[in-house]
Image (cartoon, rainbow, N blue to C red; front, side, top):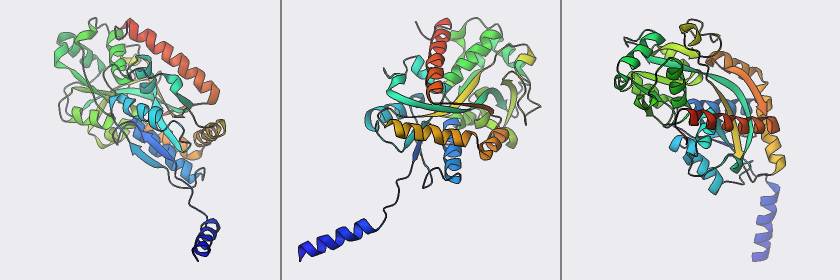
Length: 319
């Protein structure tokens, strides 16, 4: 009797299709920032294009400027074929500076970049600072009076943008620059709106909503030319500071997945990057096209890390 019941149960299980597992994207920061934006937009478009069988689950895992998420993927989920992780220049910056407790870029597989996100400097809507020159002069007059908030940790890409900008503007002692590192752009915005920081350094995609709502006022975009859709925001170069800082946005996956699964993610990201939906996302959020995938992107990451290490040494963040 028991054999019959077990056989019947087995037949029932094999005759009913089990639901496909859901893909998951880890955003290594709190909701509202650039990594969260990357996960949610890519995940949504993958679902709409029917590249994945179910909605992509987004998990926010903040801490250590992306280091907590990186460590979890490397140590606990290194063979998970349904996992991908939002990444950006902030990720390679931390790796370049050995800020992930000895972690290295070859412990994951780099899938691709899907867009370029121009850096931007904003102030609170009622700030007396009207333009980039006002900000620079305030820092030169009293560095301690101006705190910058950013969505990356101290030494991260948002911090580097401030140091590059002020260095190009003639500020000499970078050690006096005050920077507040937060777990995501939304938290950095809150610091600025609340008056705890006098300016915020971030990327266009994570700030567009706050700009449109009037909570903050952009004073400079760190791109070669003004960003389409935000034509009233001058570049730093127009204001006499020759700084360009573009944050690539993309994804990585665990190292120990199969080559077939890795290629699947490369193909998925390529399809998203070429989709009409992504073109709309870029136009609405101030992003620029930057689709680089697979082996070409792996080479880009290696070069990006080497460049950041050189810059970090120049400004004293690395020995």
